Image (cartoon, rainbow, N blue to C red; front, side, top):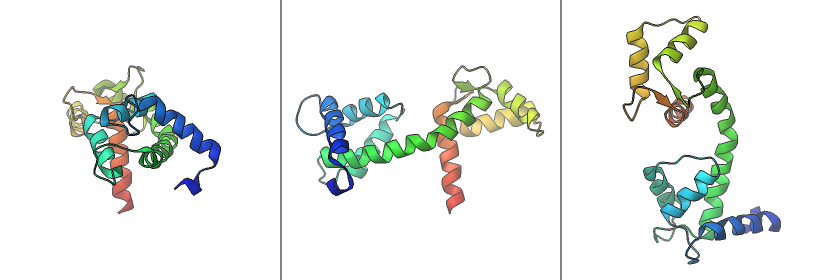
Length: 155
C-alpha cells in the first residue's frame, strides 16, 4: 500500500486523516468520514457511508484506520474525476440552474433532442428515478441513475 504512494502524497493523506480524526484515536468513524467526503464535494448518504466503512474495515472495528482511509480516498478521488462528465450532463437538463431537474426542464430537453414526450411520460420518467418522491430529480439521483446504467452496460 505505502509502496504505491510517494512520501509527499502519503504525508498529504496523513494530514487530511489527522484533520478529520477529531478524537485522535487513529481511526475515522462513519460520521467523520462523511465530513471528509463532503469537504471533497461528494454527497454520500448515511447508508453509503456505512457501506464504505464496511467495505474498507478489514479488522471489523467499525472505523477506518489510516491505511484503509488512503485506499478509500484514492478510490473516491478517482470517482470525482469521472464525475465531471456527469456534472456537465446534469447542467444540460437543469436549465433553471436550481440544482434539480423538474418535469418542465426534462420535457424541454427531450423536445430539443428531437424526442418529445407527453406530460404523463415525463412524469413517469421522473418518478422512476425520484427516490425521495419530491417530484424532481436531484443531482444525487441523476448521478446514481447514470452510474447504475453505466454498470448495467458493463454486464
